[in-house]
Amino acid sequence: MIRFFGRDVIGDHRTNLLKSYLNAIFYPEHRCLLCEKPIQSHSHDVLQKMLHLPHLCMTCKNELEVIPLNHCYQCHKPIDPQIPVDKEEPLPIQEGTLLCHDCIDANHALSFNRSAVLYNDFMKENIALYKYRGKESLSQIFSYLLKIAYDYYYKDVDIDFITFVPLHSSRLKERGFNQAEQLASQLSFFTGKPVYSLLQRIKETEKQSKHGKRERLKQIEGAFIMEPLVEVNLQDKNVLLIDDIYTTGATLEECAQTLKGAGVNQVYSLTLTRAV
Image (cartoon, rainbow, N blue to C red):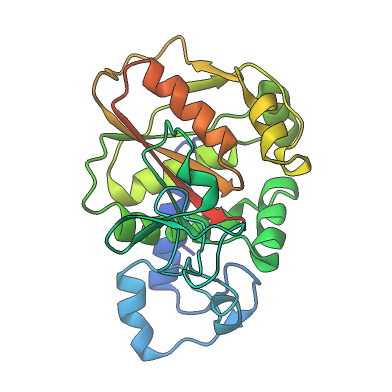
């Protein structure tokens, strides 16, 4: 097992991530990062180790559902172009892209959202283990899924830096960590883009999963302000906003409005999962 000597820095997720990947490279026996079952190593795994790919068993890999090619350009919701949405056909906005019914007439502070995988029962269970039962090791594979999505969707987008959806102080105290901050920090490790804490949550809200879109919009209004000690120049910058789940987009939209009010040019979002 690889160890780093010297003073440990509590909460340094990048160091922990590096330790995990170095151990995966030099020690062939490993377990699936999701289900923890042993994975048999083969000689052809060398390339995988060199690329720092987190290890998953085939069972878990098959549970991951990527967003289909036919999706809403704005919110990344899957769309079947042959099926009307609420009796209205999705609106083509340019060749090869569509808008879902929710996004046709809406005004968006977000330029667009992209998500790594669908929020199916498998991801719901694993995100719950990560957020509520202290299984922070799952952030290794979650952040790598974000990296794959970033490379695919944002490779040609000019991103200046990364930020994340903050937790209210009471919820942060209860949980012990902010999953969005942890994922953003690890995505920064992969991409080389700096990550900054730009937002502060001043309004404690009920869990958004308990409410529909209209209630979410009302509840989240005014929930965020800019961090008062931010020393980074935001004028005309393009920011990537990170969160774990996109449901209605209400939280991300409110964050984007706050950022744009502070001078940010474009706000994009990248989430681990997309609920449908």
